[in-house]
Image (cartoon, rainbow, N blue to C red):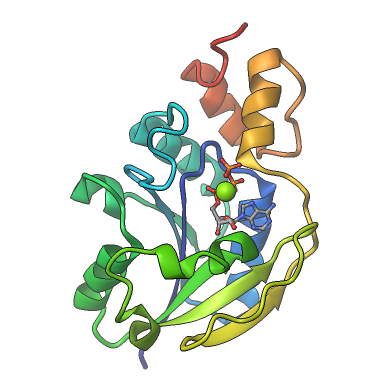
Length: 196
Ligand code: ATP
Ligand code: MG
């Protein structure tokens, strides 16, 4: 039987419970065998906007966050490929590795609204089912045309990596917004604390 694989790509700078609840809920609702949290090597949409934390550090924090969570994995695919991270390349690579698998691309609504800006994405709608996660506080977007789409409601968590970077930089608490093991990993690597 072909396996069902979910892909949740992100910068994860850092990972937080919004990402994790989306991943767990997608795995459960869509009966995925594996849910990959694919850490972007160079998030081309964010390059130039701000300094992005080194990819290996972001990956280590994601791995710590999911170490005890069944079926959810940190993926270094884009980091090993190197260069700018395009989802189309990642899907092509997974397709080669798992020719029989059904692939589910999980995105928040903010990302779903900007799919038409993606590079080399022309063939993606044939390759994957798009899973649009309703993200709390965001106005609903129309389902993108041309894709097989599943809508997924998750408990709304009004949290973002940007807000966590701000909190970490000024020493505000992040407990329960980030899993404890991931917080330990952030602290032991001295990440996000440049202003302190
Ligand atoms: P930043 O604030 O730096 O943009 P972010 O919190 O949006 O970070 P990303 O790494 O950009 O995190 O997001 C990766 C994916 O997770 C995207 O598809 C995004 O829509 C989704 N996502 C992010 N935050 C949430 C949340 N609170 N609930 C549900 N999905 C989320
Ligand atoms: Mg974002």
